[in-house]
Length: 326
Ligand SMILES: Nc1ncnc2c1ncn2[C@@H]1O[C@H](COP(=O)(O)OP(=O)(O)OP(=O)(O)O)[C@@H](O)[C@H]1O
Ligand SMILES: [Mg+2]
Image (spheres, rainbow, N blue to C red):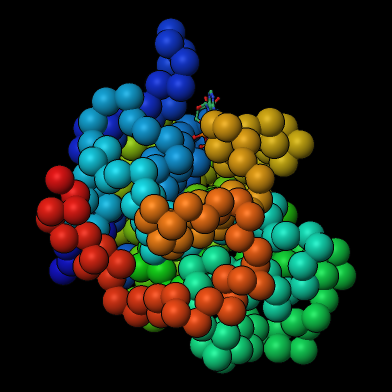
């Protein structure tokens, strides 16, 4: 039995530019707490747009997006960092801070929310161990393999124990066996209670996992199937039955590589720096009216900020009392 929806789209349409075909159209869908959902569909079908609406990076043109029961259009901007703190995000191109080590990349996610140093010292090694990189904490991203970088990115996205993890083609740049390891990691995170929504073109991942599959075509959901596979099973002819496993995928996406989608794929409407969400989080944590210029807050200051609030183990929306939303 499905639990209460943690994400709900109520008749949502997103049109980026007037006159353009909507990126997402009349979307009515719910994701329950604890689910593992695959979003599949050809390039441009609206998967990333759906995810960016959950993060409130993109606002719907029509309709309402609810996260943890809250209407995001009514979430004041100063609450957005708190929303994003409770949603981990993993991208195809990892997006690690290039001049920081694996350890520091994970630490940064904790530092910007003012986690006490003692807690940071416990959590970062714990996360490195969880992703199997306990001996590589001192490496810079360019000294790690793609699969290892993605593990660091997952550790960073999960270290705050978010209730939702959005993964946008997290295995897109990885070889099949490395991809399978990343999928195992996402499965483990899901088993620990986090709702995982993964956009993917990785048919092996989808077929192996047999989880809920939501397929999009031209911004609309055309299939929503529990225990589904990458494609709707079609009658297998003798010829297609002999095709190599991923041939249909290649035909469908003949030029499907990052160079073609890099123009905008996953990129926010206004290109923020990598540290921007983190800085936004810092802005939220700064004392209102303290006059502290948030952009001047140093990372070290944040780590040292012992008075800062502890990592919330519970639903961060718990603090969103009704009056605050008003
Ligand atoms: N910032 C933007 N401005 C204008 N149009 C956009 C923008 N982002 C996406 N689109 C358009 O919206 C549609 C859906 O794009 P989206 O990124 O959601 O697709 P996708 O399913 O994630 O594709 P892919 O598998 O290639 O990542 C596409 O037609 C795309 O051109
Ligand atoms: Mg995309």
